[in-house]
Image (cartoon, rainbow, N blue to C red; front, side, top):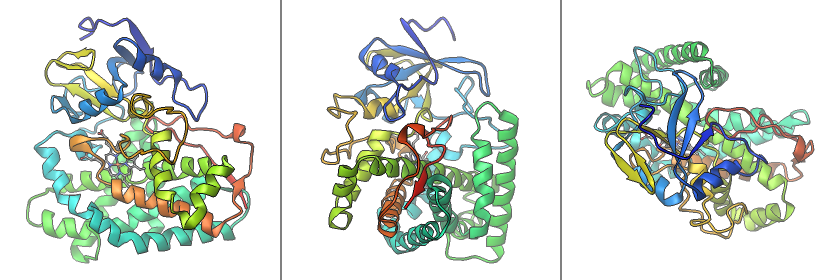
Length: 404
Ligand code: HEM
């Protein structure tokens, strides 16, 4: 494949940030300049060159283009994590239709706006409970471990009917699985998660409850519509996709409120009337998904000024798109009065985030409970001392020390 590319600029991935609260400057340069290639580090496969898509309109078009495949089994697909011989670790997120649609449809009814609205009281109870536990615990506390991670893990665990006490196990295994540059460890964690989910699903076959796994087992596995490998891949995808993303978003949104008193006062006034606007704008502003969105061209196509040949791959930067001044003027400003609803952090097209309504609800209620139960919350270190993790997918805080 090398040799089919003709471009004037190559960017080593991941590009460095000058400040953790702003996108890497190189993304802006790429957005304003000629078609750009990124050099992906050798991870699972070999070092690889892929096209970088950065402009808002181009990113939106690319996400909806059926000529760009998400199927990670395709030869040459830029893998970020290892693919087990007997399974697809990323589930239908990394498949194309018709298989993608067939699997997605079995769980989609669980995530409709109506279903998520019905979950609201249960999620509220949980965010209040975890905020109360935080308030009763020692100071300083770490919001990432002691609140954000717990909230998102418990929500997804309860949705799947997994007992609360097992969340620590899958939190640990998910972290290992998503560790860059350690394919063997990652694969071993994948197998442990699958074994755990298999045991859980078999238990639900004998003793069903009012949960997603019981419904999948009885409505789709028992009918033969899903086989066991499909079922486990779906469950693993939900466990992984639903947890780390939401926890990361809760943490960075909290940081924004703790470092800007005027913003905090405005957002929390009138019982948090502006909280939903803040959540959406904070998602655009932080755009935590750094490099998780990759696709491979099944035929030659043009995305904006970039000509992508069949077999070449693209890195679709949601972060660059959400900071494109053509779509969001003065993008480096977190402005709760702008209409951020068109941001692309939930993706677009066939793979649009299945958990968007749930994720939005979780982040909103988590912030509401946190600042209501701990009104004197403050950072327990200088903002300049905060560390961000070298996370392969998300721009995530390593910890967020808090006192109150
Ligand atoms: C702030 C939180 C979240 C963010 C930023 C986020 C972001 C995304 C993005 C960008 C995609 C599309 C990736 C692509 O096109 O390659 C996606 C897909 C997905 N997300 Fe989320 N997500 C979040 C929360 C959740 C939650 C709570 C769940 C619930 C289980 C979830 C489940 C999924 C699933 C199943 C997919 C795959 C959809 C498909 O391929 O059809 N996400 N998410």
